[in-house]
Image 1: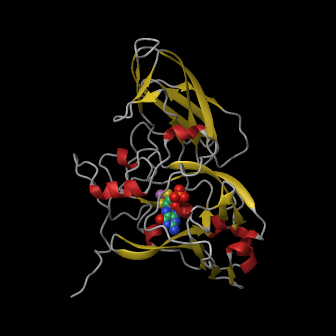
Image 2 (image 1 turned 90 degrees about the horizontal axis):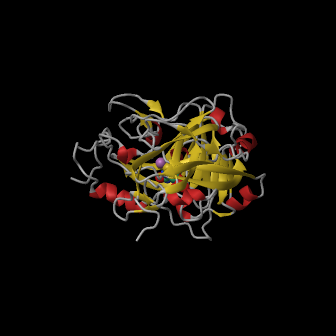
Length: 376
Ligand SMILES: Nc1nc2c(c(=O)[nH]1)N[C@H]1C(S)=C(S)[C@@H](COP(=O)(O)O)O[C@H]1N2
Ligand SMILES: [Mo]
């Protein structure tokens, strides 16, 4: 007798054709939260409005908790550092748009059952910390090193596998300078809040959220590719449960609209009055700089060039775009589409995979333009 965890080979579940969001998805959706899209007006997402995703529990780390970051494995001089010691090392601040790889999942058919994001799993912050490459240079990586495994302090069970949250970066990414991967201790100039990884987290500009390990306590250099759950079971693009699948890495391009006008409480559909309506939004890509944003007012049948705000040099952050729309009475579906310097853009057909990852299908925003100039 005794209790056992579920079979470790359980694949993630797909919802049945007419199955609504269930209690398990609701429980995730109330713990984790998205960016209210109107907050995309801010260049930097204000505290508390940045999206949050945590697989297990948020660790309780009061101020007087002695925290140690170990750096070891295939290195010549293993190190243990306190957050205070990290703060005395050279610091870098980078503005980064972070997005969950599962963003857009709940819009897929069939729907993979997991955190049911619509399109709001994104935020932009300035992260301050020590470049990971400096720490790795300090410890002296052995010649046979291949992966840098990052371990968080949170612990849980996922599809039957009990685990610490762990993700690896290839050595070349961990020691790269384009971008600098950071061991961050500040978000927007203040110590990390609990939900964003206090006291230390990894920040990997341009990569989907799963790589940015929060509550970072251990960095381990390995001489074999890391095969942990979050690397080889989760976060892979699979059509069938048995596929090996491609790993999820960098953020695919996406543009979103700041919702125009005002909302209907229940449907969230938008209402505008006839006349000039300035549409605005954000566009980003972790693969190459965004070079183009387009807008459609007819559900993606025709596209118009939007004006991208001047490049302010924040390569890893979203860019604002604007478009002047002349709204006439009627019902519309508004969309926006980003293209980056490598020509990656967004599809009009859903890019489906079993995990519901990297779904950058163009957004659809239903808008009703009223008949008269003034409402009642
Ligand atoms: N230790 C730990 N790090 C983690 C996670 C986690 O559950 N545990 N979730 C990851 C995922 S899937 C995402 S999308 C981002 C979310 O970061 P945020 O909550 O700061 O926005 O954190 C990543 N880092
Ligand atoms: Mo995520």
